Image (cartoon, rainbow, N blue to C red):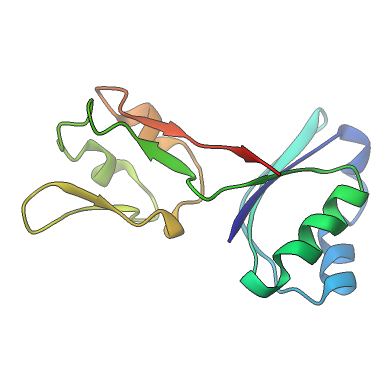
Length: 131
């Protein structure tokens, strides 16, 4: 499962990820990180059996946790299956199916947003669900 973590500037100097790994025993995979003096945002993959423990551990540290069940959302009414998202996605989330429609495997998505900005019909958006 993927989580989006948002944290405040004062948390940047703290080894949050290391602390959570040691505390929960979860193997966390960082898919994307954007850390700046104004705060940060990290997308991580976590094992399904550790979801509750990891979410609880981050929340105790005042990190905003967002479950990314749908990291990228396609508006099927707008999408014309042009394939622009296929050519721009750095992790191969999109591909043409046998019928030449665009298929997606959102489990691969790292939420970079390239497909959203590259879609000529604005049929894609980044999804978020608060926990």
